[in-house]
Length: 73
Image 1 (cartoon, rainbow, N blue to C red):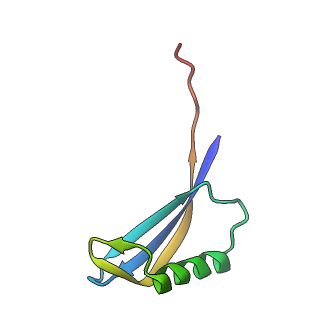
Image 2 (image 1 turned 135 degrees about the horizontal axis):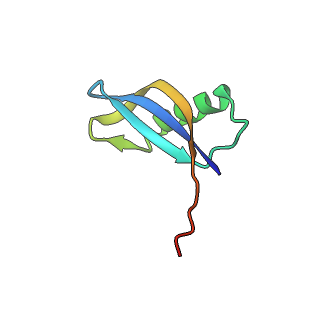
Image 3 (image 1 turned 90 degrees about the vertical axis):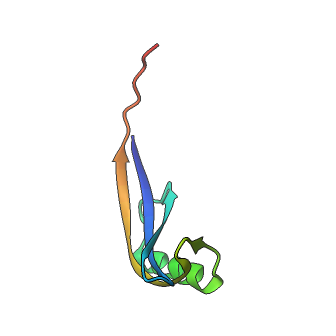
C-alpha cells in the first residue's frame, strides 16, 4: 500500500526552512493547488515555526512511502 504526503517547505523570519507535511494527499493534486494553499498559509499566518512566522514559499513535493503490513501473530 502506498502512502502519499505533501511536504510544503517555507522560509521563516530567520531565513531558515520550515516544513509542513500533510498526509493522505490525493493522486491528482496540481502545482497550482499547492501554490494557492501555501499562499493562504502565509497570508493567514496560521502556523508558526521556531524561526518565526512563515514568510515565503521555498518548494513543495509529494512523497510516497510503501508500507507492507506483516502479520506476526
